Length: 179
Image 1 (cartoon, rainbow, N blue to C red):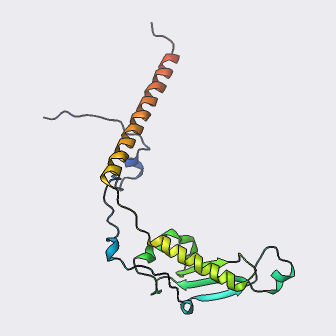
Image 2 (spheres, one colour; image 1 turned 90 degrees about the horizontal axis):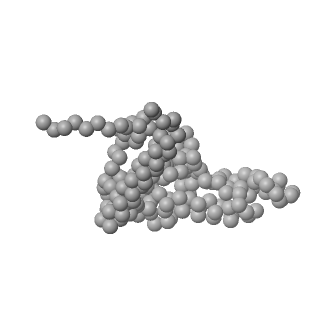
Image 3 (cartoon, rainbow, N blue to C red; image 1 turned 30 degrees about the horizontal axis):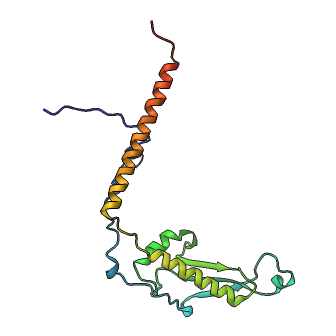
């Protein structure tokens, strides 16, 4: 017969707050295949597949702002864009969820300069950088990094317990003595 041990779990412990999640931070990331098997984004964005609209910009600029359509807005349907690799699309949607409309259009705007062509180039650059960022794969942890992470977590837990113990002793010393 094995002895039964009881331990207290706070109502805000990770197991109670996130009951269905895996708490093992050292597990292998199996969400994506290896980098060699994935199609890469080359940086080419076909302008003919983008809906580009120009409008009047806001901000300072005097009469020029009121007359010239210098603000650029580019949009495209994310799911039907063949020029973005399929494995990048859900990651891009997750990372830039504020830029995706209810209809599934991805929207990028720029009114950084007073020139329409420079704002269009800025939109393309923003879009390209977002796609590159979404295509970056997380690096695998080495065994040394895993060991270091475990040691840091154990040290942090020991520090928390030590602090709790000292707090408890301070509070016990405040109580009136029992005769």
